[in-house]
Length: 89
Image 1 (cartoon, helix red, strand yellow):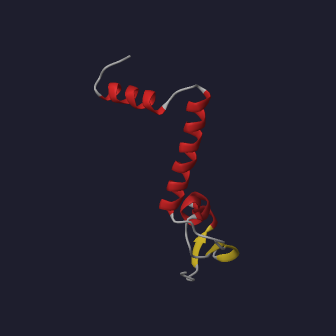
Image 2: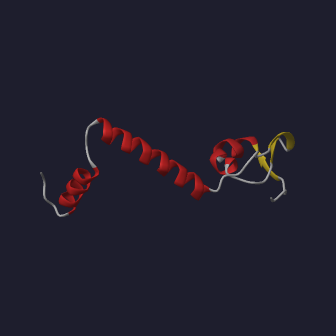
């Protein structure tokens, strides 16, 4: 883990918050040149892993929705193939 502390002004910290939330290094937040606080990440999830986890959750939700509407995988794939060919049911 990189332990270099990055110093940023309060406005910059607010405007670039998403970037700093994904950082692995502590951030010293300054106001008028004086450090007023620190943001210290407790953990750092690799963005690709977060994307994969979100995709898995979306897949579970899609499966639940399909089952609740009685749609089978074959019906879904058949409709998908037809739409890709430009045909409509």
